[in-house]
Amino acid sequence: MENLTDTKPVVSGNGKKEELIRFLDEKLEKGYYYSALMAILHKAQEIYGYITNEAIEEISVRLGMPTAKIWGVVTFYHYFTLKPRGKYIISVCLGTACYVKGSKRILNKLKEILDIELNQTTPDGLFTIEAKYCLGCCGLAPVMMINDKVYEKLTTKKISDIISGLKAESVNKLS
Image (cartoon, rainbow, N blue to C red; front, side, top):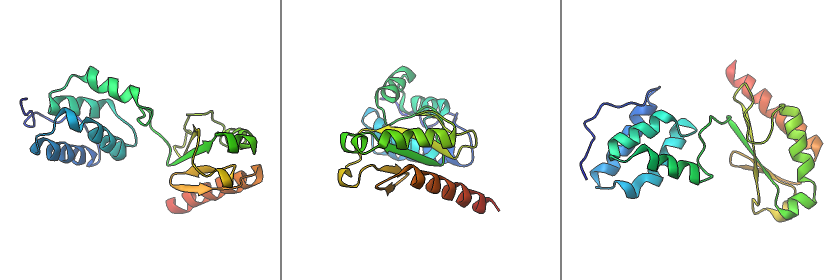
C-alpha cells in the first residue's frame, strides 16, 4: 500500500490536528494501515470528543482508505459518536438490578433537571445523558457513572445535589 503521509492535512483546530497526525504517522511508520483503524478512531474520538468529518477525511487520505469504509466502522460500533458530547457524560444503568431499584426514576429526573432527552447534550455543552445496560455494580443499585466516577444507591434527591454540584464546579472553574 502506498504511504500518503505527504498529503496536506485536512483536520483543523487547536493542536488537535497535529496530535491526530502524529498518531497516524506513528502507525504508518510501523507499517500499520487497515489494522490500525480502530486504534486511530479511538484516538480521534479521544482528541476531539467525537469523530469529526475532518478526522475521517484525514484518516482516509493518510491510510489510502475509502471514507465509506471508515464511516462503516464508525457507524457500526456504538462506542463511536458523531456528535459532540458534554464535559460530563452521564451513563445511567438500566440493567435489571438497577431498573428494579428505580433507575428509570433516576433517568427521568436527570432528563427533567437538564431539560434534555437520552443521547442529547445540554446547550451549554456540560452534560450528555446515555443509557447503559449494566455497569457491573448491581449490589450498589441504582447506579450511574459520570465520566469515570460511579454514583451508587441513587435517589432523585441525590441526583439534584450531584448535578447542582457539577454545575457549581464548572462555574467556579470559569471564574
